[in-house]
Length: 326
Image 1 (cartoon, rainbow, N blue to C red):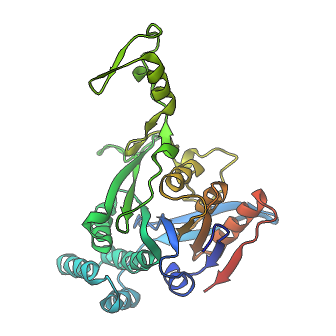
Image 2 (image 1 turned 135 degrees about the vertical axis):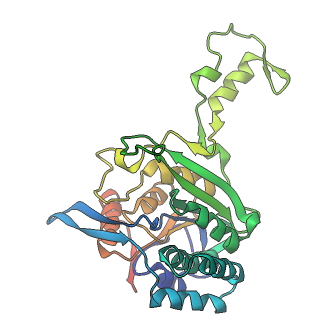
Image 3 (image 1 turned 45 degrees about the vertical axis):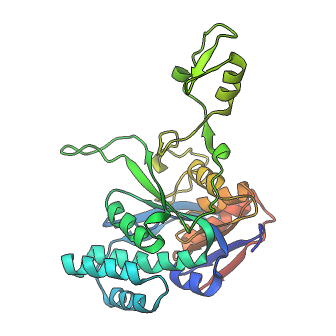
């Protein structure tokens, strides 16, 4: 696939990935799947015919015949031995409950995503504290413990009804790579040093110390201008509830462009292909288009796919998007 890849599919990502995405075709995956939040989410977004208000998706789970079938299918898949054994253990401990149904659902799709990734490619899974600890172990099973690179805390603030716990004000981005040789563009995701660390007001030409060595002011100025590599806690990106009015589309789990810009800039190169199997409002596609990457977006909700299409063509009226439905 080339940098002109622009695909938008309606359907269960498991089937779309199996039928439409070749082995090793993808350079970067970002997925923001359901969180097992036990909640229902409604959307209200504008269309040429007015405002659409209806259910976006239900994030509730129970063990069903589909769960049993997907669990059984793991037995015949490449690379599924470790995740299957992990799920067997959880079923032995807790029984076929809602958590088991949720993890089986994601395990099948994570194995398909791993197949679609080229060697050295990167995957970011977006989750919250509810099931994040189980998802990290599941990713260890799918990618191998050595595939783990970062657990990034995306921190934000805002009102909270919590009274007996500390308010839960961060999401987690679990970053894994498929083997070595992965892309990481550190210079693309640097941020300014805080004023506290810039030593403003020092006399021009004064010698300063860095890592035990003396540096002159000119070198220090260049160092400060370059900025620092952002840490694994991100404080500078607003949460979905604080997205600018201009960017807001009315989709309940919309993520800010700044978040996806950072992920895509860090872990892919221009001309690469970025895939989002739970595309929602299309933020991944919008950021990928802006940064010169190809993209494949999938969502089971036709409203979400239509919202993504309108979002992309509003900014790029002549954009040619390959569409499909499974």
